[in-house]
Image (cartoon, rainbow, N blue to C red; front, side):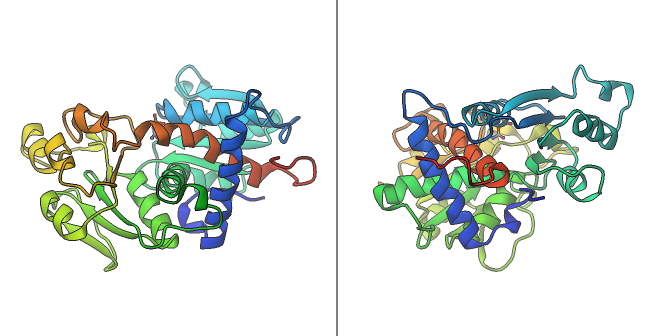
Length: 317
Ligand code: CP
């Protein structure tokens, strides 16, 4: 059984292959009839223990475009509220014939437990576990960057030569962790930009900046990836005030104006407008935030296709 648990599990060729398949899926998504028969007869359960808009809905759309039968499970309103464990919940769903489980959970390691504890024997796709990993977010981010900078030349290519600055609450961010791993695999240079309390620990090949303006001047990012301040994961105060954070680490129109002319602005969403990113920056011509959302469907189709299709029944054409 194959799983997608972490971007650390992908080598360069596997990651590029997923981006290439996603390019084919994007073509399908531009057709009048956006549907492939690839997963006909398969049942996929979206098992969400944590709130989500983009990931849950784009997985559902991706599954339906591949003709799978889709079941959406939300912990709210389920027997989890009566104390049922992750193991019993998963075994119950597997007993009903789930062919794959897409899981989002507040506990880091939950997807690994489902995949490797021996409770069930179906592919597991990690849709975000605690502060650990969010692999399909990093893949859709890489796809968005590749499309933006390589366009028609994208097939088979990685992100060599590009510089990506990830800014904000790195410490609590599964998006940052997944992106740092995948961007390195794909050949990009990376920098993290944050106050000392939120930057986390990183290997020497990740540039570190405690000053956003210095990062813009010295690192010269092609991509600025802004992260949400995750107030729900903060047990204590990591910066003196939201106003000060926005002034020092927020991306406003003035700071965005100092980026390179062809630099792009990204954010995984949901955004705290006015805190880590201003409305002017989020809605500017350099913003690729809605492209990220659109590309999420193509990437999730590609991941499902890779993990679940036999390869015999359908081609993307
Ligand atoms: N980016 C992301 O994971 O968004 P959701 O929490 O809305 O799924």
